Image (tube, rainbow, N blue to C red; front, side, top):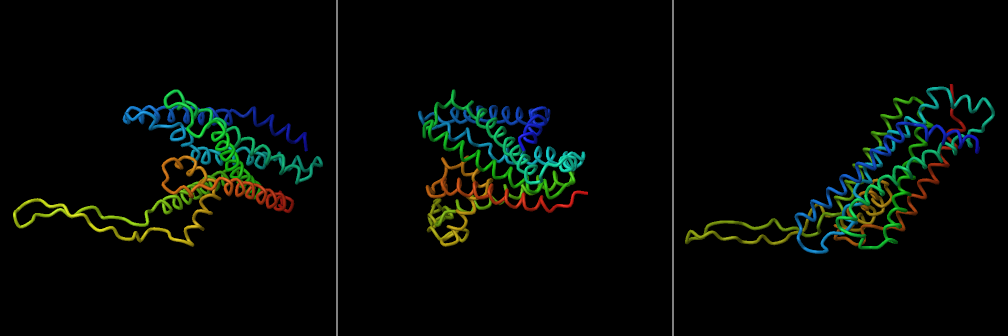
Amino acid sequence: MSNIIRANFCRLFRSRLFWLLTAAIFIYSAVLTYDSALKYTGTHEEPGSACAEMFCFDHGPVVLLILPVFISLYLGTEFSDGTMRNKIVVGNRRRKIYLADLIAAVTVSAVFCAAWHIGGLSALPVVGIWRFGILGWIFSVIKSLLFCAALASFLCVISHAVTNKAAVAVFEIFLVLIVIVAGSYFYNKLLEPEIVSSGVNIFLNDDGETVMEPVSPKPNPDYVAEPKRAVYKRVLNALPSGQAILLANTVFSDDEQLDQPLYSWCASAAIIAASTAVGVFGFKRKDLK
């Protein structure tokens, strides 16, 4: 298995697309984070109103969207070029082949994630260090590494189930888009306030004067109440996209219980374990013609 891992890493680190995407993530994160921090400090004169957390974690969904682009092409090439069949013919067991591919996919997710966070450090010269400290930043990085690895392990299952390189690339990108939209949906639904006000009624009284009359607050029909609210929170914190959205927006959330870090860590670990088990089982029985 060590030989397969070394061969995978050799091919990975020689891939121009891999380094191009890594550089693109770093530049994207660095430029947009720095620009956002500058714009915020330029429009808010209150000292200490900004913190690094508001800017340096914004680009997790972008990393999740780039992951299927590379993983589908990287693993799909092995099937389209006949490399996978050759590995099996020379005596490598399918379980070891799959695990070696999984390690490569998780490594890709870790490198992309590192490029995102290193680029996010560009906010520090503008707004200073994180308000929750270095330890809080480390915990947030660990969380992002886990949900990126969870998505990579899930994509690895699909890449070994669908062997057509073009088809798997389109399917995985479409699937990740659905996951991101789902995470955004659950997050926005949980942000709905319980009570809403329609604002004010403006009218003229008998003397011709303009009068503003506040409208009485009323229950919000879009508010998600318990026990459905608890289910939405669990789903949001389990989805990799939901975790990425929470990481980018927790500072702005009025619901302190919306983000559940320990549950998110466990959910990501469970996705990795379940995906690995399903992937190994399915690949052992796959007919490679």
